[in-house]
Every structure is written in C-alpha cells, then in structure tokens.
Length: 456
Picture (tube, rainbow, N blue to C red):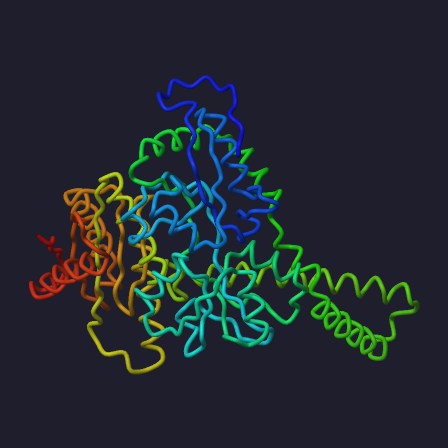
C-alpha cells in the first residue's frame, strides 16, 4: 500500500482508498516482490498518490490475465500501467499516457533481422496472454501463428528451448530477463509495432479518478521522469555481457593487426598492438551504434523520398483516430496520386521517376505545417495526415500543394496529379476513412487531373 502525503488537494475524492492490480511479472516496468509492488509504475503511483491525496491499495494477482479479469469484475478499480485498446475500452477509461516504451522481436542468435511483423513470415510467434499485441496481430496480421505464454520471463525460457520461433516483448524487460537468465543464445532481431504508450486504466464506475490522475501526471517534473527512467533502464547491460560477440571481435582485430605487422612492418612493440586493438574495438562499437540508428530510421521511412512509410502512417492515423474519439479534435486526410505521362521502361527513366518522386516529396514538405504527417503510402501515392484540421483548412493546404507542384515545370512534364480529401467522421475506422478518401481521389482523376475533390 502506498502511503498518503500531506498534499493539500481541493479534490472532493481525497483521502479515499482505490484498489489496483498490476502485471506481477513485468520487470522492470512493474512486479510483485515479497508482496510489494515494485518497478517504474510503483514510483509513478507513489507520486500521483501524493499529489491527489488518494491511497492506492494493491490487490495481488498471479498473472496479467488474472489482473485483467479482476478489473472486469471490479475486484480492482485501476491498473496503473496499461496500453489502451478497443477491447479494453469496453470496461476501462484511460488517463493520458505517461510512459512510452518500444516492443521488440526476440529470436535465437543467428536469425536475420526482421522488419516488424511483416518480416516474420511462417515463423511461430510467442506473446503474453492478454497483451494488447494479441489484439493488434489478430486484426492486422491474422495469418501469423501465435503461441500464448504466461509471462515474458517464462516465454524467453520457452523460446530458448525451441517451443516457438520468435517472441514479442518489451525492450527493457527482455534485456533484463536475458541477462538475469543468462540466455546468451537469444538476441533482439527487430522492432514490433506499435510501441507501448502506457496509461492508467480505471473501471468506468470509478472514472472520477481519471481527471485527478491526469492533473497529477501534468504536475510531475520532467527531471523526475528522466530520473525514474535512468534508474530502471538496463539496455546497455545486455551489450556489455555479450561475451561471445566481444570474443569474436577481439579475434578479428588480432588477425587484422598481425596481417598489418607482416604487410607494413610498422608495429614494433606489444604495447602498440594492444593500443591498436582497443581503437578498433571502439570503432566497431561506434559503427554498430550508428547502424542501429539507421535501422530504426529505415523502419519508419521510405528509402527513395525519405518520407514516412506506410506502416508509420497507419500507426499515426490510428493514434489520431483514438485522439478524436477521446477529445473530439477533428482531423483530415489528403491523398495525392501521381500518374506518369510516359511509360518508364529504361533504367534512366526509372532514375528520372525517382527524382520526380523526391521533388514531389520536397514540394509536400514545403507546403504543409510542422504538425502534418507526410508519407509515401504506395508506389505513386502520398498521404498527408492533418491533425486538428477541418475540411476547409485541408482544402487550402491541398490548393497550396497543387500550386507548388504546378509551378515546377519538370514535374508537370513527367506527372499528372490528382487529390482526394476527407475529414474524419465519428466512429470511423482507418480503413473506412482511407476508402472514402480514395473514392474522392478517383473522382478527381476522372475530372482530368490537376485538381482535388473533397469526400462527402
């Protein structure tokens, strides 16, 4: 139980006791150890308790699935660290997100890098029962073979034994368990969309608590959030304990140094060899870090134009739909389609086409606002997502884009342009929004290109 503070609150619900459940085996995010709630969510819960004057009482559970069952039965009033989903919104209201964390794909060492779920192929995937990722995969990747597991810790043991091929887990939790269990034959082989955006979940009968929690979250200093993250962040520990990789690097460096001695005869002492070896190791580590950054960038961007790619746009659009459902802040979508005036059969024509696509991307970026999201959605289609934008403002933006591209003589010689625009409607899913905007795009192309049409 987290003690109340002497915080002077005007909240009429102060001094009340709120029961809550957690995932008992999700270190370092949260866990139950010796009957006590520990981890990142425990520290945030203590801060929020102090600021709103509410006492939080832990109801122990044996698994995450049991915690979800308890809140549905209202044996617990809240869950302090949970991802919103369509299913969970049936029995929970959610606070503002206060902690974000990436999800990763884990497999046996030697497995090639996987580009998200699309790269899993026919491999079987292990995932904790009750996690939001189960809903996400079932909706967007129904062909994947799932193996439901009790917890990330147990799942890693099962993965090491070969009971399935790939496991989905949280980055910090996966690294900690791999280190603690000394599972040196497991490695992270990719990122899994979407990333965790963790909030408080409160049963609908106690939804008065959501407003208080949001207020408390806004009062937590940024430095305090950074301190909590640093305290529990352990990703680099996995790298420092990967002795097999380090040993291989040392062997390669020593061989290179011996060849250099024979070839150039400039090393004259053992101390010089050691120094050179250390420099090479540092260079390899820096190169690995840079490649990891590049991989992270490429997973969300188009390789030709540098704009966001299809997967990232879908994720941002889903977030905007969720925001619209919570706060009723409208959004608009613009689809721009390019049609080549001549067939590109030779390689030089393909290069000209890529130059044209880059020019269109630049024109889009020069026309939109900082808050707008521009992506290359398919071969010759671009989507511009306009948050908090009504249809009339979206029309103005579309006209600016057309004016910018019409002023570009090279683009006009190579492409014809058509645009479809629509404003997000109540209870509309992304696929429905996209289909409605695409119909407006086709109408624009039938009108002869060079214009835009707004969907009804």
